[in-house]
Length: 354
Image 1 (cartoon, helix red, strand yellow):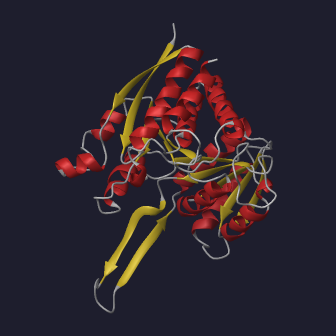
Image 2 (cartoon, one colour):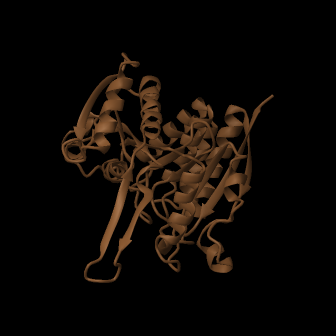
Image 3 (cartoon, helix red, strand yellow):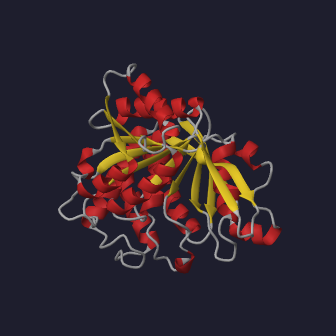
């Protein structure tokens, strides 16, 4: 009997529904090819719902989403909604309440994709960033004193617990053992300045490394990593870091792999429900024009299948995307691909199906 996965679909705002539709098209092709089923349930969380009802996310949402095997997200961000309302009220709330404590970001340059780094090709850019996703400076600890006065003080604290650090590091070591190319794990931090938080990270990292003798370990300051991403990206295999630094270096990673149009990520709860999404925003100026690049959403669907255990289907999706970038589309930029959004989805789906 074929396996069935219950997938929550949140198309979101702007071009989110357009790229999600292509991701689902490829998901359908993969399910037929590899013999599994996907039951899809759509949710209208996003800017339009908020403007219509005044509700960002229903109180029942997280409990309902916990019942699913995975969540497939398009994009959140609406031009008529003040920045931060939807992002905090939907994205951050889901990450925290569903305890998606890992942000998983593959950084891989595909064939045919333009890289802004001189002399670098697919053989140089192929690494993964594992970011702690529910602590650090995003925990919301801090506040104001004398707000709006000349003596105003604003504080924002980075919260790092031993439990949170250990579980992130454990995921990183396990991932490195099972999925990385070189079995090499780099801790990214700032031990020379952030001497409390990264003393904890460094000690926990060194202690856990003793249980993984097959993993090569090293350390680099975050400022050095940003330089080496540009100069020597081939040095990296898997990187693990805290929430803030991970947020920064993954955006740099997206640029060196060709831009947001190809970057996909996962918000992972290894013991619960995880959420997969294209990294780029909702791009509302391209809404309804059928010109947005859907490849990042398609790659996110592939990541979701890999997480669910459908590794063969995930590899087939990635191989199909690599074929498309290497031989078909002219550019990852909206309106410059040489094909429409739906045509790109059709091409990938047809290649997955054979």
